[in-house]
Length: 188
Ligand SMILES: CC(C)(COP(=O)(O)OP(=O)(O)OC[C@H]1O[C@@H](n2cnc3c(N)ncnc32)[C@H](O)[C@@H]1OP(=O)(O)O)[C@@H](O)C(=O)NCCC(=O)NCCS
Image (cartoon, rainbow, N blue to C red; front, top):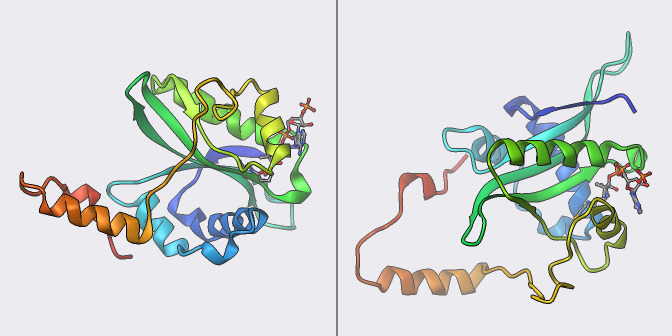
């Protein structure tokens, strides 16, 4: 399949949001989506971007359809106390009619290239227990399932009231404010 892999720009946020809603629907999480393309513009393409994204784009047809994104990999850089620089792959998606044509591997290959160029030692990501096709896809590319490993890692998160409660404890701790302006949520 002839498609271009390129970095997303601010102008891609509308179609990108469409693809992100598709993957949320795929995961039965469409009701939980609270962001929109304006938030993407602020968070990904403002002064202090929180994420990076590459797109798979179908080129424009002569005298026909305009170029359009058909897949994406959204990632950000992080740090491991064990291994140093890492990439966290938040989401990898190829629109259903274009799957099985090598586009997922192309996107993930580009993320791997970017990770190594930035001195990262690993690319981390999670997959849902029921998503065997995605788990098989990653395993076939040599990924390790860290839940199945002897270390039995579990993916966890703090959010909602638990996060608010914990932040209260943080605010009560002596030591003054640690937050920087880059950590402040910006209203789009
Ligand atoms: C997972 C996903 C990104 C893979 O992208 P893709 O473009 O379909 O994958 P590719 O065509 O690059 O596949 C490469 C290889 O994986 C295999 N593969 C792809 N999809 C597969 C599937 N559903 N089950 C088993 N193998 C699969 C292909 O056969 C191919 O193997 P080959 O090179 O030996 O022929 C895509 O299927 C997708 O978006 N799925 C829905 C969203 C999702 O699950 N995302 C991951 C969330 S963690």
